[in-house]
Each structure stands twice: as structure tokens, then as C-alpha cells.
Length: 223
Image 1 (cartoon, one colour):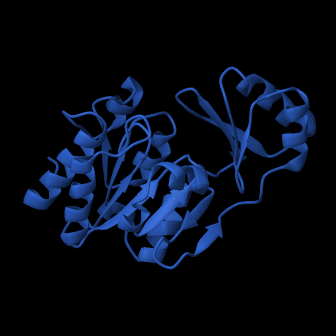
Image 2: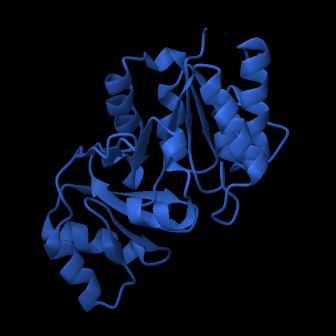
């Protein structure tokens, strides 16, 4: 088996409008039954993910908060991969009235409030970066991204990144795809991601992921 694992983004890739359809869920089950490992790599916080997706147990590992933590649905283990969020930054932005979602490590807002976030990071002299995902802007420690989170999950599984198919749709998936042996952009992905991907699916969202799964099971090859 050349490709031993599939690492997929959630929103805009597996899910459309936050939901995964039945055919895609069935495809994920077939992928597991084929002996492959499944890793979900998302910018969402775990509580947010659980609120819209009840099938986390299909995955061997969850990489959440855009690489800041990993979670094993089978054992309940959860591990932070970077320092916790900055209380000073959160207080600064809330004082300005910036809408925020605060996770274990990640602080997220939406455009155009990324401007206020960047200004506060500079004023407070914090070692943080802003990563974009369509209209979302995620604040994380420098060097933390989907690639670093996926690397930690693959280490737990004992799988080489060359044996992984990575699937995504947006700006923050560049890091994910760059690590994987085969990179896939679904049909609805942003143009820049399609340009750098090895494969662009014919289907959008979950239909594109299902297309990848079926080709892997039938041929173990996406070429």
C-alpha cells in the first residue's frame, strides 16, 4: 500500500456549510476498512467541531486549532503542541470590540479585524502570527500550522508523510499539502491551492474527497 493515510481538512473540504453528507461518511468508513488511517486537520476548535460533526470516531487523530493541538478520539487523549493563548492579546482585542473565538491556543476572528489583531501583536511584542482561512483570521504562535500538527499525529501513528494524501481547499491548507506525499485540492478550492496541488478533483467538497478515496481503494494511486 503506497498511501497509508488520508489527511483532510474539514470546512470546505469534507464539509459543505459545516456538514458532511452520508455518501462522504460512507466513503470514510470504506477508507478505514481498506486499512488506511484517517486524520482530520481543521482550523476549528474541538468543541466547535463536535457541535457540527458527530463522527469523530472515524478518525485516528484530529489535528485542531490549525495545528495547535492533537486529539485521539479513541482514547480521549488531547495534547497541546504550543503555548496557550495570550490573555493580554485577548483582553486588548475585546477592549476594542473585536469579535473573538478563543480556543486552548488559538484566538480567531474574521476579516477585517485581522488588522486590529496584527496591530495588537506588534504593540504587545508577541511571537504570534495571523493565518487566513477564507474570511477567518487565526492567531497562533509562530511556527504553528497544519503541517506541524499533522507531523505530530503522523509520529503517533508511525507513518511517513510521503505515505499520506493531503486534501484541502483554502489558504491555511498550503502547509498541510506541502507536507504530504500527494497533495489534493477539491474542485471548490481557491485558485492558488489548485495551482500547487498534485491533483485537483472533479467534485467539490465531500464529493471530491469521495473521489480520492475511491481511486485509492481501486488503484492505490491518484495519477
